[in-house]
Image (cartoon, rainbow, N blue to C red; front, side, top):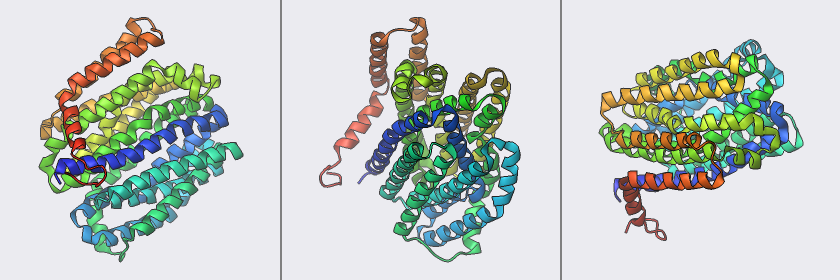
Amino acid sequence: MSERHTYVRNTLLLLAANALVLAVGFVARPLIARLLGPEEYAAFALVLSTAAALSIYLNFSLNLGLVYRVAKKPKKAGEYNSTVIAFLVLMSAILLLPAYLLLKIVAPVLGDLGFFSAFVLAVALGLLAILEAMQQGLKKFNQFGATQAGSGVLAAVASVAGAILLLNGFLVGALRAVAVLAVTVAGLLYLKRFGRITRKAFDEVWAYSKPITFAAFASTLIAVVDKYFLAAFSSMSSLGYYDISLALVSATLPFTVSLTAVMLPEVSRYPKKILSYYPRIAAANTVLLTGFGLCLYYYADIVVSLLLGSEYIAGTVPLLRILALALPVMSFINLNNTTYRAIGMPKATAFYAVSLVAASIIFNWLLVPQYGAIGAAFATLATYLVIAVTGTVMLWRHVKVGIRKTVFQLALFALFAAGYWLLENPGFTVKTILLLAFGLATLALQRKLVAELIETVKSFNLFGGGAK
């Protein structure tokens, strides 16, 4: 079986899992927002973003080193796994009180219930990151896909049920934590990779993670900067409008993570392969996200009306259009970070991550106090654009990865996005014609990539599961 065949097969497994997560999430998050209303949904959003940030502090980014070490030494996977889990449990106990006292000052709107929900969810997410790191490093992508799908779907179902029964954003967040924890524990037991807890295993994982970890302590704030600024300088309802817009825009990002997840262990072993992987993944990411971004940009009013209802139209449609413009460059954050990690440059990953947060703080500080949610949306667009361009240029200068087709695709997206305003808010028919024209132009531009994909898919024996 060829390497390209194997890569496409594993990627398709993850894409199938993420298609399910996308479908469920694209419906579930708006439904939760609709059931809770803007203010209670904002409370739910604060729990999710705070938990995402806290989880990094609890596991010190050891999951990143875990992927690398397990890919290098799969026979020691059990020892690495048990050691990293033990560290997460220890840090959760140590940081519980300091985290509580800090968030009392930084985000008082959370209160005791909000903090409890966020902390439990953070522990669950930390364990989930360890499980996924193990599966990724061992190249068990069928299990990796099942974990992503299972955690995403069960978390969505639990959250919707909580929104119906509890009508409290903080409690809905706690219920989501229970769902994620259940899937993670089941996945770890099924994987059956446990071993001795050793100082040597910790030192090996820590040696890789160390340059990333301290930068990650700052970079993880990207999950909360915009929301904390809105909570402090605007209103909870504006935070709710902003977060649901961002959730709709970000729904497709797990697809792009699927492409890099399969790449990481292979490039970790053979770094020169990045010259083949990067241009193809960058182009595929950009094709997918420019298409989805343009759909959201053109049909924002219809999407909001159908998924969220009239209560959200005025507050959400303008934000959704702004954030849709940022979507195509968002994937470069993950792609570039993963590339630096795969080729053994964790310090570059750290610098890149800290720069992202610094830019976010600056843009939100400049825009949110005066413009509220609109300012936060423009701050997000500016942050991702500046850091994605800078990071890609830095990577190109260091590794000489190919980005020409990607640049052309982004230019095509910009042209069709600008056409919306040049035609003075065109109607549904004209927008649909423009979208079809964009699709045809994309096929023509990316014909080589499409041909490679078709050729590889044709080589699958769909009924036997192997190559002909």
